[in-house]
Length: 185
Ligand SMILES: CC(C)(COP(=O)(O)OP(=O)(O)OC[C@H]1O[C@@H](n2cnc3c(N)ncnc32)[C@H](O)[C@@H]1OP(=O)(O)O)[C@@H](O)C(=O)NCCC(=O)NCCS
Image 1 (cartoon, helix red, strand yellow):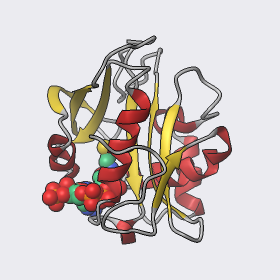
Image 2 (tube, helix red, strand yellow):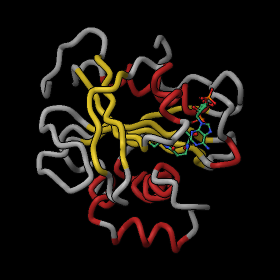
Image 3 (tube, rainbow, N blue to C red):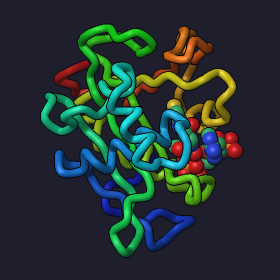
Image 4 (cartoon, rainbow, N blue to C red):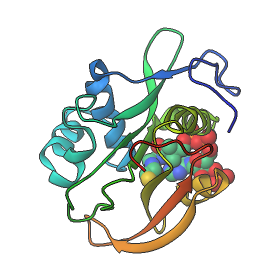
């Protein structure tokens, strides 16, 4: 967990990780379709994500809500190929983790770039970015999703199970962040 934003990803040296800003909302909608396993990230999937109240809450107006933090991976030409971001969810939404002081993580990588270390670098950079603000971060992942192993390797631990937005089972996982000096946790 020693990586910092703006460092190159190891398996894809031309990829750079940098903090997300409010200008990146369109990119996050695309990445949300990947995170939610909605398909190829075309305009139809983005529109579906925007119309889904559970998914909408991860991105709508991103960057304007207190505590929004994220990182984006870009190829040398500037195309975004992945993102990981955090948002507080003060109000309970069906199918989402509800813990007001602990932000929820969303992460997605372009299908063609997966398995090459981009997600690992995104999460490492996000942990560095978030540690001064938060003591703990959480996520939910479908029980059958191989990404459970990915999060486990990064130190996330299962804390509970829940019914997700498609009525399946999801695992709620949490990661304690280093050097807690949080204003939200
Ligand atoms: C999960 C994800 C963000 C990881 O990014 P990545 O760049 O592929 O990750 P890395 O290359 O650093 O690590 C590889 C690990 O990612 C996971 N992974 C790889 N491809 C995946 C895929 N298609 N779906 C889910 N997880 C995948 C695996 O756990 C893999 O390691 P393992 O095979 O040894 O278990 C990315 O694969 C992704 O967007 N997957 C689809 C959406 C998803 O499941 N998001 C998480 C929802 S909570």
